[in-house]
Amino acid sequence: MLDIEEIKAAILEASQGKRSRRTVAYTLDRLDEAAQKIQDILFNGWEPRPHPRRQLKEGGHKKLRNNIQKPAWWPEQIIHHLMVRQLKPIIMPRMAENICGTAGRKDQQLYKRKEKAKGKGALYACKKMQAWRGKYNGKKCYVLETDIKSFYDSIDIDIMMQKLRRRIRDKKFLDLCEAVLRTAGPGIPKGFYTSPWFAQLYLEDMDEFILQSKFADHYVRYMDNMFLLGRNKRQLRKARDSLEQYLQTNLGLHLNKSTQVYRFEYQAKDGRERGRPINCVGFSIHCNRVSLRKSILKRIRAKARRIARRGGLRLFDARAMMSYKGWLKHADVNGYYQRHIKPWVDLRSIRQRISKGGKQNGHEVAHTEVCSKTA
Image (tube, rainbow, N blue to C red):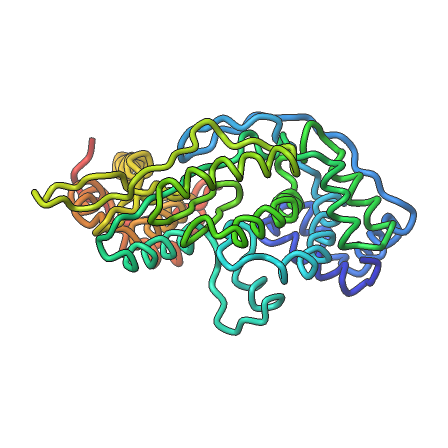
């Protein structure tokens, strides 16, 4: 971490998406001087300071997140990126194949030695579910769907430090990790760049336990949301009980009360769909199609109508609609798009309009053709 070139790389990595800020631009203009200052801070011993806690309401499902902490750009965010750059080669090689939500495509290429690596986000988990769905070919399939209750808040820092000491021998780095972990309690800090990687390390042994026990045919985890697929419902219930006992004994965690074992959706002889689809990170996976959650579809429709009422598309809204376009592209919702979104805004022209965006009255605006239909 004290290498100057490594510090420069961490500064550039931490600046992505923030380079329009004055403090970030000032740091990048004096990159050599900034790297030297970070080196001095680390060499003399750095301790993070406490931060005010905030509430955050997520846009998708309006879930209220408490105790969110936002570290300062200088020097905390840079040091966090510098720490994660050292943690990735330690954690990534032992990460199971179907673990999603942490590692990106570049991480897979660097630390898994995969030339054609795939990003392991929500779409990766959804496609895995679709592939497994086809293997059952209409036969009985049961799903164990669960997550961990108050995951970040329930992580035991002492157990976390034991796991770190088994993998790392550098005492100064361990002291730095412990200082960051104990910045906020209970559990690990929410909002820190380091926290997802610490959480991944914390659940590493649990993944190995599930895979070696062979409770199910398939297993995928997105952060703390777990899905196990198998043909034996009794075996999945046994997996649920064993997993609860393992978490409580070894990690001090508990499964959420919403844990369920159910039969995957299938078509009965009368042509009707029985069972339940899998609600996986925003997607609803049915026996013959993939749809989106109603809350996501409603949010896209509301956004399109607001754009039509405004008569123009701001650059911020254009980027949001491009993100929504990715959701729509990978789901079978063309009918919904034709009825509720296309009459208000044409998603095909958004990319072109973003490239023509300019500044108007101090705000970035990208004009687009909207339907003459207005609310």
